[in-house]
Length: 173
Image 1 (spheres, one colour):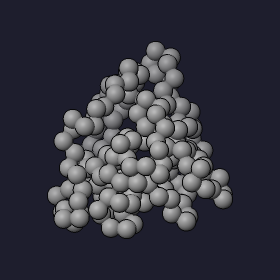
Image 2 (cartoon, rainbow, N blue to C red):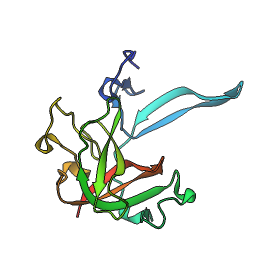
Image 3 (cartoon, rainbow, N blue to C red):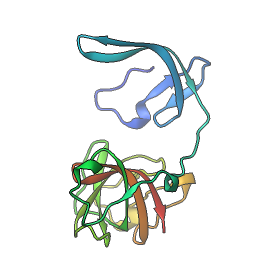
């Protein structure tokens, strides 16, 4: 693995597999090694890492619970796969770092229901934004590279925590 700069981006992660193949963040891999638990810290001593064929996930078959106004405070949903439908709206400001947030409007979850989305160029991620962005600058990719219609209804799948969905998959409706 190439050393990472102090402030790194997902694109900075570059690993060479045991067969010489290039591996980057988001790739499906098989890792073999020995699992350790020393002093209460868990680690894996990696012996080999191999890039595997990408396998698409069909989110509609995963029984994600639909978020509604009546189950929004259900603590049993924390850390679980959920889904919601609505229309994305950009906030006046975005966050720096790996994730930012957007609002999911018309979802029946309140006016400013937060969806946390990772910056990047892969499906379910938000492309880079210029300093003075407009809605036209917003680029979110769906599965298979399908562009998401930013001002039209979408279905969002992700893990529910901190009263927000952490996006894994977005699809046009």
